[in-house]
Image (cartoon, rainbow, N blue to C red; front, side, top):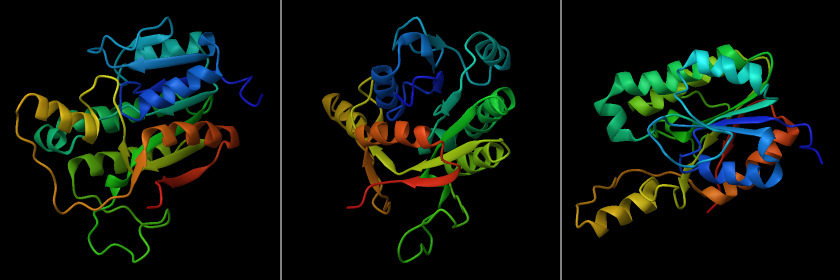
Length: 232
C-alpha cells in the first residue's frame, strides 16, 4: 500500500479533529509506525507510542526525531477556543506560534509537514461573494485567528509542507466536553448557561470526514494551502 513506508508523528491527538485522524491512521499503520503527542495534562489516549509533552518542548521533539524518524508530521496541536485565547493571549501565542516554530525548526528538511490550521484566519468582514478561496489574504480579528495566521507563515518556510485550513469541525470529542456539540451538551447536563454566537457564519465539516481526507492528502503529499470544508 501507499502508506507502507510511512512513519507519522501527529500532535494534538486530543483535539476534536485530531482524535478521529489519529484513529484513522491507527487503522492504517502498525503501532510502531505511528507516534502521537498529547497534552501533558491529559491521561488519554494511552499507548506505547502516545507521548505526553508540550509541542514547545524542543528537547523532547529532537528526541522523537532521532528515535522515531518520522517521514510525515501532522501538526494539529494548538488552542482555538476564542474566549480562552482572548483572556490568555500570551498562552495562545506560546502554543500556536512558538509551538509551531518548534515543530518546523526540528522536523523541516527531514519530514513532510502538514499543518492543520483554521478558517478563523479570516475575519468575515466583507467576505467574497463565493466565499474565501486559498488565494485570499488572511485578515484575522481574534487572538486565535492571529496566532494561527502567524503559525502559517512559519510553516511556509518548510521545504515540503501543506496548510489545511479546516472549517468548523463538528463531532464527538475524546473527552466528551470539547467542540460545539459536546460542550453544549455538557453545559446543559450541569444546568449551566450556554453562550453562543449569533453573528458567526462558517462552513462546517464532520470530524469523521476530516479523518477520511487527511490520509489521502498525505498520500499525494500536496503542497501549499488548502481549504477543507463541506458544501451545504
